[in-house]
Length: 510
Image (cartoon, rainbow, N blue to C red):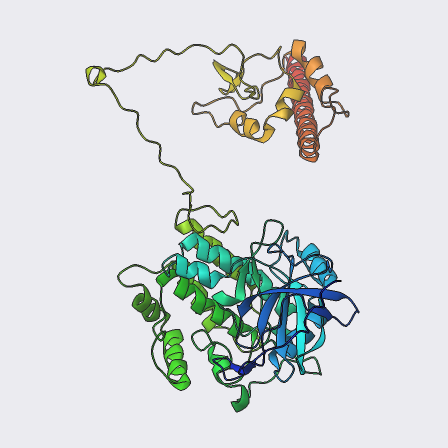
């Protein structure tokens, strides 16, 4: 006979209370089944984290096997009496479905976006208590742990690369009429290989900044929501219970200062929220002094200064220029001498410009110059022919002429720069010359006239619009020159006739 398994006995431990005063859920045993609103069942694994409002467990949709350490999902559990997870669930259902994220990314051409997508949610009874749960994809380690592992300082390339990815996530949230209000290292998770580099999570304080009429909410002090968020990073607006898009950018700015300098001035002090708020007001009034205090004796990055100045000048309802902010972050990486490659690394950082080391010269060879042998290349370089080459031989008007009139070819001229050649040939001679234009020798006249016919030379198989315009101008000039020559020939002929008639009259009189 099989031995009967003893009934499960649930412990009734003492109520756990978070640092913020909210009750934490009692531990749920590993292997518990939870069914979400879509009737899909999930199997609970071990606990991997405890936050300010609830607990996070590994989860799997494979009910026949134990939940492994490589589970692809997590389930966030919170007592039903608490409110943050309810807010977060509604946010995910409204704006964080995977098809919405993919569509937004495609419109902007982004290869990745650190925005978690909604998987499932529901309610569950355990040991006589009701819980609310949310199913999300699983991500890697949080940035706060990495910050502590790096000795509370991030490399300038790491910090600005993180900020650039976070800016994309903030733009997505803002475009869907929400603000995050709690950006910090513990709410930033590294992605796995097939995911985005970093994800912004925990939307328990997410708030709409647009009212029901579709307009931006007014700046009205709200005592109930005053000082919401994490006090070290809370924006000046959030200290007054007012949330805005510029507030999210300000919170990111405080994170950047901490990552790059190691510590914020008001961090670690036993200060009241109002005192921290006043210090932030003073800091944003004099950004230069604020950064020099944080980075002393080092110089703060110029890009960080420009970013905080930009955020400080934003009005309450103004939409931030996210592209400009990312440009500043990339500028900070380049100014430090590194390449903007989008790779988040905490150890290896290769300089953008490598300095070539000089080869060691043997002592006996010092001072001896190597002979440089210049040899003609086996092939002629692929360069256009010099159609402007002229000789010292001058024409009747004193201007230099083309090297060879017999080798003259209009296709060659048009393939170069005819305008430049004309400017060279239309030079002003320094010596006094005859005002009458030289006549084209008869042996070249027929060929010269035939060159400028109405059709484009056959060698120009596919002329560009500019070549056609040059060709038209040259034809026009040629016609004008022919008219001038014919006019002068007629004039000289008339003058010759007058002279002949005058001589005849003199003969008659004589």
